Length: 236
Image (cartoon, rainbow, N blue to C red; front, side, top):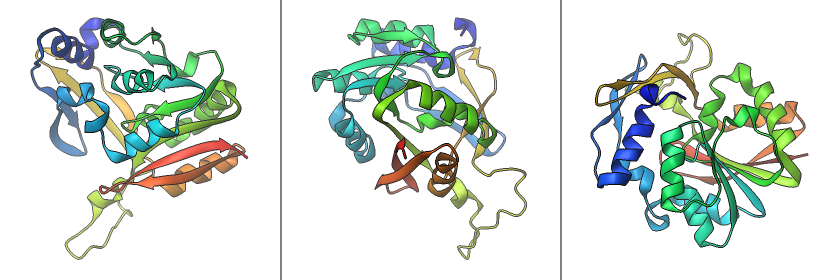
């Protein structure tokens, strides 16, 4: 990733250097303008949502932290005595992780990574990098390649069907073109504008269906208060 197109990386680097950052703005045709509080990317274990804490406690063996950002999950795992490889496509995020003490931080795309891991960790809706249901085949092919025998993938996501709920509580998805969890985002930090990118919010049943097609199973091991859940994916 080129630094000029990396708003999140610049936000992470600024917060690490100064303890503060400007607004990390998020745009989507589906939603009103939003922002990511940069401070949350640096949160310690005791400030993480219960689902994330459950995921970290379930990690074992050699761990791959995908889309590690500022490295909060990797640092928490290291403090637990775990062996972690943290990857992110942002060079600024990777540099920040190294400065913060992440032992093995790499600028790396998940889909081109080689290696074997006992646990693949994808938090903060990390499975969103799949982008669309049409890429699930490529995703599970890569998981099969990276996951050691007896290994697990831990990921969280949200079922965003609630955004189509009317005043009477009825959810109407008939007018949605394609899968309702496929979203396009663009970020901006100060004057740095990123390129648009696809992001996937996948409901638990759809995730389980795609897992079955690839000889995996997806078990829901925790649910959160905002239609979110934590899944453990393993080979059948």
